[in-house]
Length: 413
Length: 187
Image (cartoon, rainbow over the protein chains, first blue to last red):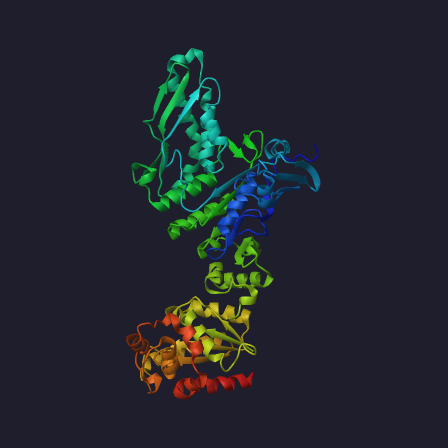
């Protein structure tokens, strides 16, 4: 019991070592609490790093073969989860093995072995859940999600009086690529499966509608941020979705989606500008405080568990007006007081959000031939120079006009 | 010896570095471009001056070459005064370690000073034997007479120029090198 983590302590990612995915041959980096900003030229492997890191944080290693990951999570204690798949593809072919799964994991709390397992879902995740080591990772990639259910696509689902609807359950449980905001809403919709009350059987449809309306109160938590940062003045579920009932106690809700109020008119998501879509995507992923959280160990309810969020954001500046980007960065900085946010960017304006005492939160990504993607923090000289720039002008100027990203050996022609 | 370079474009500083390296090779001289991502219009403003001071204090070059185009003939007194004023102002923030390489009309005039090597590179046949810095719009002249030429080639072509030929054919470049030598000796 001593090793249980206190509920009020929030976890943050302190260090990660990854190898075995695309350009990530052997990449190690430490992170700080709050906001961390990764800069680096195009094609140095920032997206590969985020993709791999997201898998590692979810303990979901689909499409990975010979890989190693070591993540160190910190609050008062240091939790280390080491995972590797020792399977060599060549030996797999030669041995005619029937499975490519040779994934092994070990977890430690303050150097004490917590679990040593080949069964991630049954052993590792259970132990982490028992010890309250719960993360909700989110990965906000470029653009907007391809399948943006409820937002860009109407959503239809079935609920019944017998328990969780299987299709919706599988969709929520089995899809790590669903945006956090959507996954949280769908998880809430799962709990709509218990509307049945014999005394009220005659007006089940009204009850379902009422529950959906009540549930939307949670979604409203993101409204103030949307109003401040984007042109969106209000959001709601469309009022004209349908509810169909069959003779087996099943209800099908058809065509539920979000609508957006801009300049006094309600619009579907498809009518919004690319920049507004992107702002909604980022704000909803970061600010949404759901009643339900989908963590790396399963669905959890924050009344019982303290959920720590780690949010990876690729280039928040894409398609965003500079004034709105300023507001967005202030928002992310504020949110990073309670959530760890790791950003990649090509925008000096994004870098300007950091204070002089946060220069350790800058990470430089580069690609070295034969060694793949490398990440590093600023050294002492670079920090001193950055502070000098911040006294005279802006941190972003250091990046824009000087030699911040140059390798030390290449600092001269 | 650290030689700093500030120019109107990265291709200008690289081109001049490539030319100077012929006489002042990289083994003995370290070339450091400063503020690589500013352009000509940004060079004259106060912010650039502040940033240059930071770069100078951090990079600590022994000598700093300011590469500017006059964008006019030597008789253009207004622009000439502007460039001299620029140099005087900016030289102050680098502890007077600066030296001005003023190209008349523009940096491409140095290509005219060794037109044979230019022709060899582009397989062109341009003839030019006058003082290159008396030629108006030399870049346009080169483009009109050599369709393959574009200023983005400058760093590569400057690396092929013969330093002595440029020195002997261009009196302004010769004057610059003589002042540069004097400054080097004083360090």
